[in-house]
Amino acid sequence: MPDALPKTSMLALSRVHYPVSALGPGRRIGIWFQGCDRRCAGCISADTWAFAEPSLSLEDLMQALAPWLAACDGITITGGEPLAQFDALAALVHRLKAENPKSILLYTGQTYDAACPQLAALSPSIDAAVCGPYEAGLPQTLALRGSDNQTLHCLTPLGEREFASYERILQPEDKTLDVMLDDDGTAWLAGIPRRGDIHNLTRLLDARAGMNGIEKFSQRKGME
Image (cartoon, rainbow, N blue to C red; front, side):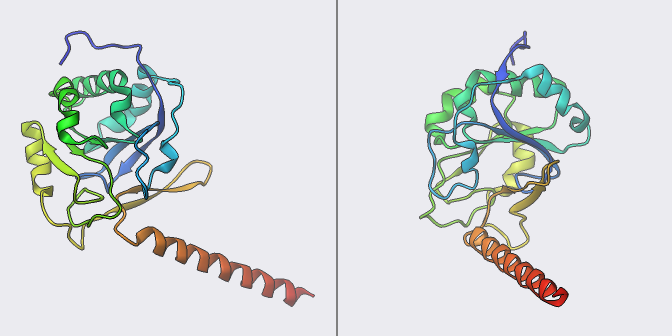
């Protein structure tokens, strides 16, 4: 870890949320970076693809995270592609690890071989990484992964303790999605949907919308 941690780094983030329980063990802080040039077909986070001018300072982010850091079980960083903002990512994870000993899990669309030099530069602040692009045409049978080409790497002793147990087949009881509500009432999903989850959810919401329309029509007819 660097002796002097940068304090002026600027980040482009999509969102920050706590608690997240579908992206690693326990109740975690989720940090979504904004911007991704991989744009995997079927990605649940297509809203994070567009690149944006970094507008959030590291200091402001740390202040926003402060109330959650003591309570959380760890931190998961995803996107978007976090490694596309490598300097800002490095400043963030080194600062987080300096102030909080809990585990940090990183998701990247790069393969492990391609990401290795950057992961080494982030050591020992990143405890585990899930590497590889999402491939909608491949099976999804492994925990914490959207497709079976993605690989899980425990990078520190803490990473081994917390994430080695996820090197296994996805179990029925594994939670794969969280439904979040923003302050303005906007609902969004966090996690790794199983195949068919989004289609089934969309069909359910369409059915509910249709039923609401029928109920409102019936109410109007009853008032005439």
